[in-house]
Image 1 (cartoon, rainbow, N blue to C red):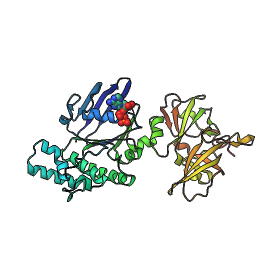
Image 2 (cartoon, protein in one colour; image 1 turned 90 degrees about the vertical axis):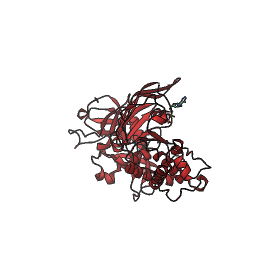
Image 3 (cartoon, rainbow, N blue to C red; image 1 turned 45 degrees about the vertical axis):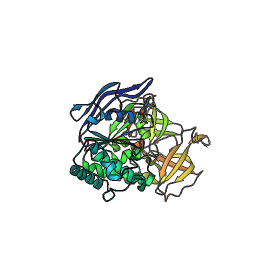
Image 4 (cartoon, protein in one colour; image 1 turned 60 degrees about the vertical axis):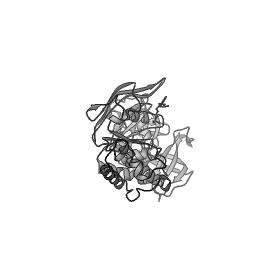
Length: 394
Ligand code: ADP
């Protein structure tokens, strides 16, 4: 196992900056996921660590060695890719031992290593199977065993589960975590799947457009996203966002005006435009407002589409504008609708008038221009809280 450090690593392809001044400092034995949308620079970052791509500038350390200009074979790494490239004419033993044979390992040591690796990936007793006789998951396990026998300091994995069906992906996710525990090796794992990143990693590095947005434990990215991009990318379904203006003691948006104390938060002042974020599970029907840590006043909304998921129901909500003027439900897209998640036993239908509260403790504020987080959670304005929480409050 080994520490991996990237200092100011940039990779430029003509007019595309695939990796933009990346700084990463990964601890010995850490499981790190590089996560982000397609094209954000995850694979290129991994390839610079592997030595498959030379960075335009910057420095890479593996362990205590600078490896920026070393070929892949001298870096102490092993890679597992999305496309499981097993040799079709070789059985499991020969596929796993291929690299060792190239390096002329003695037969008994090779046998020992192959058997140990096969045991770790639960393929023992299948060493004479051919790839055509194996499932996708088994083939991927052989590919992982082939990486294990090399006894690398660092495992680099690029979407290794992407070609597997959904159920197998979940199984393999657990197996990789078990493997990590057992080997105690640094693993750098590329995925565009935020659920995979959340469940497996010690820390997630979230990338966008070649730039590192945040590197932190999964729950920190979830609860304290560094910016609007991370807030929207981590979590499924995504966080709700809407534009708001900071009032003297309220946060004002189309249809909602939430009492809050701007003086309690550094970086906002009356008149500022902000992006407000709130997750679907932090909105509550008024009847369940006791579940919120700090419920706001009640707002009238109309339900749009319902999506029953089994363990929860997603409810699309349309705010009611100008409630004092008779009120009319806004279009979902046009007027900043909200997605709320409710318990499956909730008695709720489509096109119904309902009342909701926001959990003020879970309201995130982002800078309207830069997208940087200003606050995770807001507090009510002490002077007005008892009187009136918002324009629609009773
Ligand atoms: P990801 O793995 O996050 O999908 P990549 O690292 O593959 O993203 O790509 C990052 C960006 O760099 C993309 O815009 C991609 O088109 C570009 N890119 C990657 N490899 C090359 C290449 N060999 N030549 C030119 N552009 C490339």
